[in-house]
Amino acid sequence: MDKSKIEHVLMRGVEDVIDRKHLEQALAGGKTLRVKLGIDPTASDLHLGHAVVLRKLKEFQELGHKIILIIGDFTARIGDPAHRAEARKPLTESEIKKNMEKYLRQAGKIVNLKKAEVFYNSRWFLKEGMAKMIELSSAASIQQVLHREDFKERINRHQDITLTELLYPLLQGYDSLQVKADLELGGTDQTFNLLMGRRVQRCFGMKEQDILTVSLLEGLDGVKKMSKSLDNFIALDDEGAQMFGKIMSLPDKLISKYFLLTTDLEETEIKTLEKSLSPRDLKARLGFEIVKIYHGEKAAEKAKGDFDSIFVKKEIPEDIPDIKVNNGRISSLDLVVLSGVVASKSEARRLIEQGGLEVQGRVFRNSQEVMNLKGGEAVKIGKRHFFRIRV
Image (cartoon, rainbow, N blue to C red; front, top):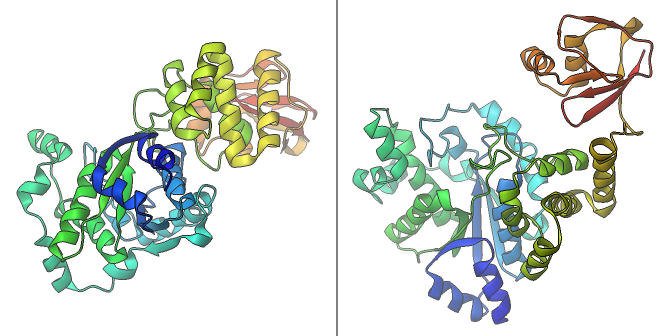
């Protein structure tokens, strides 16, 4: 394989490789690797943070390697304890099933699922008996598992650690055994779990997988890892305009990192853009590139044009959805709920109190105020959502 391609796949966005020399030799030797990535359906949406490692998986696929995507429908019942200050709330089977509905379709926006192997790890965990679990638990000691920093912090705070949490890294490692992984990918927060995969494979007499970790992507707050629970995420299913608007709200300090981890631009081109464009124009280009990946170039151009019209020229978009209102009478609260922008009345009330509802340019801050609408009025809810009243 071309040395430049090997360097690219092992360098761009990569934090660590174990064992680098062994992996380099395998790639240079032309061996077809089995490259594994596991994702637990603990939420209903994949976001750009997930896309970072999915894009790395895609790079290996494009180099001719066999990619293996594991949907952790069994391990999601426990939830990965990595870097968590407390135990996760256990998910029910119905919650997991609901979350899984969109996972493969969203992952398919990045990798070619037709050429991939896809597994649900309930396939083996529901089949294996207690004897296998006892054998698996012998692959590591309590001291080794408790060595991880998040567990040590919880112990120091006198917080409980459940036995199922202690088992989680072993279960993830067992996935690697089942699919005969040569290489496993993950974020830097997954290092302990990925190393456990090597330990489990070794315990069962299998050759140890190599490990490649990618950089974690901070969310829109610019501080914490992108997460749906923190509401600082950009979902892969976000509409083009929504994606673009969120990118434009990104802290300037993250622009370079987002270009590197979430776009297809070469690093030399990124550096040229950084020298020639202002932060605002850089973010506009970043937003364009990201929307283009998930929605196409035409949608990216429209998202940029709509953003400029709304936030630069202060215009109201022409092509906006209707909100149907019976008889034209409706409270501020019910109007926001009817729009579907928020998920609950409490969120709608909070948005209104913060000045997030405008009708024909007038800001409404009283959630109980009743409007008499005639139809045709322009409504702005939050920063980026526009509607037209239809009576």
